[in-house]
Length: 192
Image 1 (tube, rainbow, N blue to C red):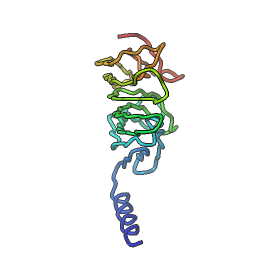
Image 2 (image 1 turned 135 degrees about the horizontal axis):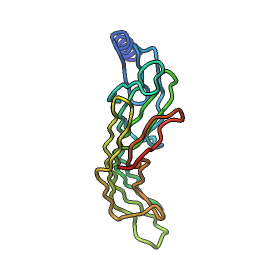
Image 3 (image 1 turned 90 degrees about the horizontal axis):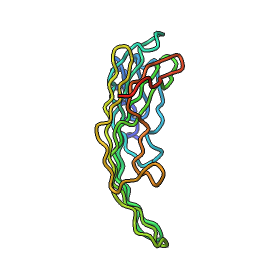
């Protein structure tokens, strides 16, 4: 009980000494703790270990209220479940960019900017060989003072190579191009 009390007192001390923001893995506290945004998991895996959120920039994008916040989030996982009828070994590191309207607590833009994945899946009852390989991609993300986003593909590697019509172990939700903010949110206006 004494241990829990010390942790709680330390946490209160940290909260009271914060001047601008405190950030943990899935909660973003800003404006001297007056605004809280609860973030969805980067991936639906409960085993993903999150790193500290980085605030990259704050920019007035929609012209209303406080500046919007641009954050970068990372997580990694290492899973090994061997035995029986199905085995899985997977290592993954994921990086994601998010742009938030702090006043409305609304996600304006999101994209997975990096993935590094190694995997091996096997099924004892399947006559085909194990599925194993790696995939990686990296996208550059730039946002200017007007809130215009430029996404450029830097790296895509996969072995074996899969396309979107078959098993795709390395999907990306980003498309290269230039994105402008409109009243309906971000829209891709042109390709690079």
